[in-house]
Length: 393
Picture 1 (spheres, rainbow, N blue to C red):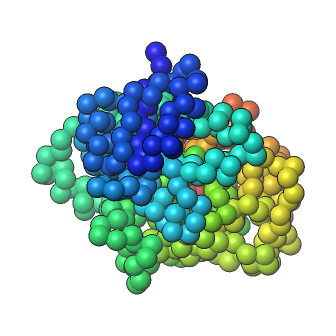
Picture 2: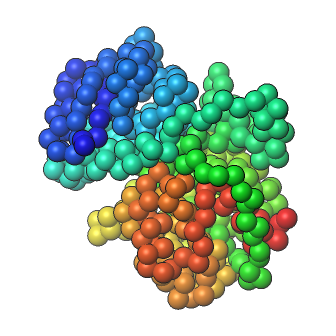
């Protein structure tokens, strides 16, 4: 059965263009078109699409509001189309806060090097997101007692949106807890006690995380749970356009107790600071433990990804050897597998996000299938696992 897609955009030209591309794939079928967010909410309820593509700026109701309403009433995988500007980056991150799973540049020439590649990528993204439909059934209504208990948990999540984005609100760094970016509902399972983690006893000097599709959600979920006195420097590789990484780093810095910044060439790695690889560049580590620096280079066109997880992980293996705690999170493709292999060969620890909590189980699957990761972890327990491993609890 074909994946049913609802296309939402106020431009008739763009709706037609996206519809033609998706309908050209036998696996996909466009079942409706909406011209604004209000129509999208109504059609999502009536047509029950498997995936929705959504513009951000539209009349009557904007895409962010529409995403929020759809995720409340009829949770559905949503792919946003965004402009590659600083304001477009902030709006796209707000849409991910509201519950969208992924985004692509609205200008197809920004998606890939040629039209055929861009068409294939769009079709593949929609097909992959459709796999999350089964996990996004509306959760059962909670009782008042359950709701009260949830709000008192130490790691309770709160909406980062409200009347304005937290990324633009001053003075919230130390006091704020994460939204975090909304995750698809977990597959219903029988309740059972969560397994208790045990530390391995290893000593670490660096934490490294690589991710792609679904990564903004996952990174925010993990990093906002870390304490201000986190003992390690952290390097982050998120596949993201160049105009997005500065806005994303600023948002994380506002929400987290640790510091977060877009990495710059020559940055000295410091404990309690996370360095996000800039989009369109490669981030490498140089020097020695305790005095390591970041090198930000163009890296040429040989690599499929800029930034590339393999590049950063590989350089971390050369500098820190077995003293790296690394994770490969949700994402399409296999970037990170070879870098993780280099880390493992150096004696480092590699974990992978588990399938059920991934938006796309590509990158973690590649690491797990190769026998590189030592543990497969659900997203909601990764921060806990880190704290146990580092003796923070």
